[in-house]
Length: 457
Image 1: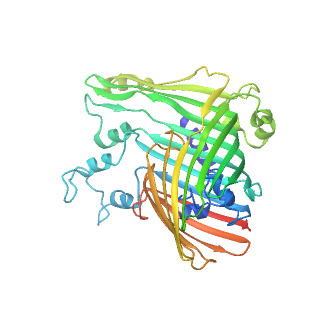
Image 2 (image 1 turned 90 degrees about the vertical axis):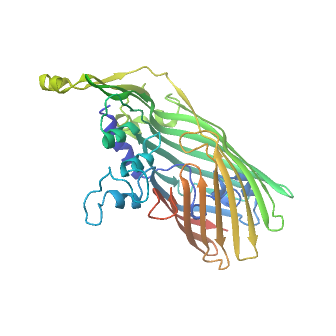
Image 3 (image 1 turned 180 degrees about the horizontal axis):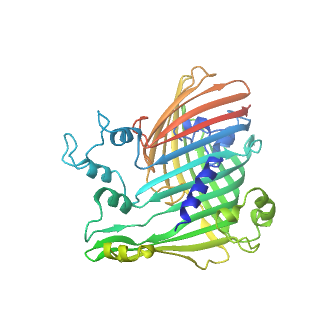
């Protein structure tokens, strides 16, 4: 268990080095991911490959530079921080036992109500398509990039203990989670245009770099008259090197009186087999580890035949009290670390996402758009909750488009975005900012920033 802390720090560093989850360019970010119908060229890949069929809008595109970074949590906003961590008007700490003004709950009860059963969750990500290897020509495209997803949680029981203490007879749940996924993808996409609609598909090879996670955890911390007890456990599994496949399918209509509609399923088939030696990472592990000690970072044996590991961490406390502490302070807590067997290979399903959307263009002034989406799975970057997003793009001055959007539901509850660009004859530059978990800077619990430069014709 003690090794989880340095491992977590390492993962945060890896995030800062520049890898991200499923990619969206700066234009799509400014539209709050309302991209089922509106994306074009290489930007359509990952959302709706059928949009490659609009060759009358775009015949060629290539990513010159594309960068997206995000960070979020499910509890702390700027407003909440200022309210409880900056003190009252005089700078004095707030009495958490007092009732909130105009409400029948205390500040402590309010803070606990802000946390979900999952506890305090936080994550970070950066998305990087590989430069010059993302190109669309006509209704075909070749794309590549690195996808990273990271999310961690601190157990709800920890916060209950900090705010309410260890009440006799009360049991605090210590279950937690950690998910880290890093995958390189190479995709070939195509669209088949018909008179009134387009259909498209993307076939992606998934080269797994590494994954790590707490795949099972539990136990509780409780206080009895005879002392403190705990039986917390965490099983931490990780692997490097994987081969996988994913397929996206898409459909859209041609313009119907300035209306367009589309539907797509991303990763309708998607999986990665981890831990074998028949993949690029494993075969070149010596070269890779000359630059980055991947297995050391993930606490995997450097034996050339080992590419996965699983460790069970446990913390036992049995009737710990003041008398016992004074008598033997060296053995209050029993930490145990045990390697547990893992199969030679592990199969992981890649999360699927369903999208449906529409757009309406009013002359050459603006375009309004809407998307409805949900994950078919509930892990990594997918969430089963429905997400409704609305957006508008002002195109009256074609060289300087301005766009904004908002979303409700999904992983973050509410989102708001704004973006702008400079579009020249053969070159587009876009910048966007999206707020996660709130509609204002004060209430948002995360932010996402994107910048992109594309060559288009």
